[in-house]
Amino acid sequence: MKKNNFKIVELKPRKDKSSIKRTVFIKDFIIEEIIGIHQHEKIRKQKIKFNIVLDVNQNSLPNEKDIKSIVDYEKITNKLENLSQTKKYNFLESLAEDSFKEIFEDKRINSATIKIEKPEAIKNAKSVGVEVFKTRKDYEGS
Image (tube, rainbow, N blue to C red; front, side, top):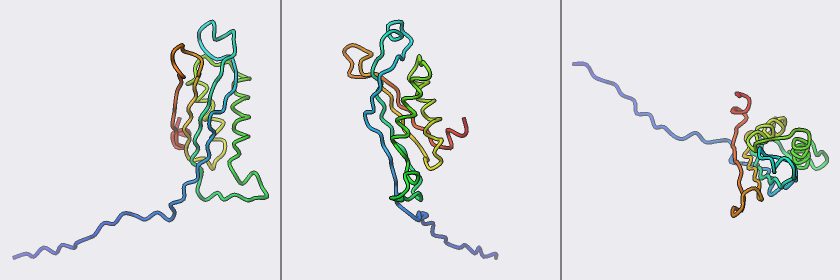
């Protein structure tokens, strides 16, 4: 008679080395630009509101003497303003995609959620817009 030798293995969840989560956000950043597909949107500037949440590499620590040690939200907002000034967009979705290109230039950013709204676009609606989440892997894979 053959005897089966079974070994009991206990599976434990892998413990992450760190539970730190560093997030940078930009809330209710408003610019006024020409954006839209309708004729009336091509004539008059309208408000465009950005809300952005960035998951930043937890190993990047701030150095009080060096602004390059942090994800600079002022630099990001300047890039967003330049995007809408240098290119005319028909769709918020296109503006969001170009925004990801600017945001992921900083290699410390692991993922980003970009929400862009037009608060005055539709009568009887507080706002309309688009929200997109991408990881660096999603971005680099596209």
